[in-house]
Image (cartoon, rainbow, N blue to C red):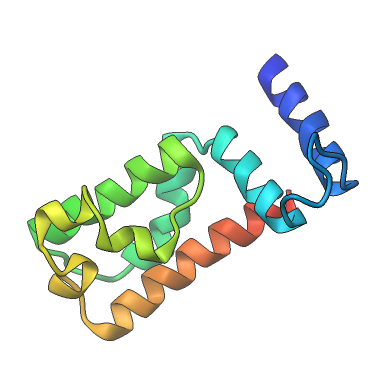
Length: 123
């Protein structure tokens, strides 16, 4: 609870433009940096991906990829789309999500990650 309170105060300061280096970072960059400090719990990360998973029959390696996304959200709060093309995601397939999902599914996954990021910035 104390960490949440401190994070809220820091976030409020960032939204007001207060920084140790004024003008060094955009407001959105500062907000996303703060999000990386205030991470999602595992159930919230899974909830965020529930719409992506709904109605799909995924193969084992696809499920493993989604689990990696959940792990990253749990550890970092957000996942930038380009991160999906780096390790550990490319450890499953060198092509990242393109090696496991079709274009529509990739667009949907990136849309979910963008929504998580937008909620984090707005918080």
